[in-house]
Amino acid sequence: MRLLPILLFVAVAVVLLLPLLRRMRVRVRSAPRALPDELVKDPVCQTYIVKSRAVRRTDAGQVRYFCSEQCARLDAGG
Image 1: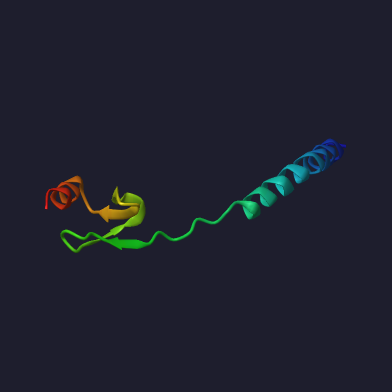
Image 2: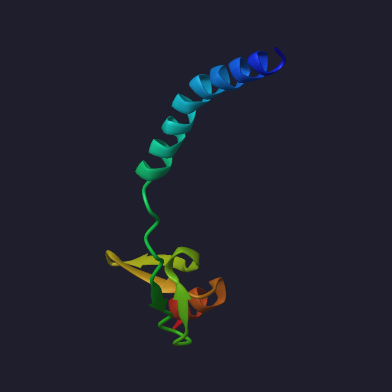
């Protein structure tokens, strides 16, 4: 007799949790994959830096990427 309530509880839990788990799996699958970050070259010191972390400056409509604020200032001054 003790087994019947336990089985009933497990059955109800599965019925309630299964749709939740399916929704979570769908969300994980549909999440956009992050594109790998690309490297850009600093025109002042010639080092490569990850584009997302680079200091950006726009000059005459052209975006230039620098490894630091210091290199960006050197480029503007020279």
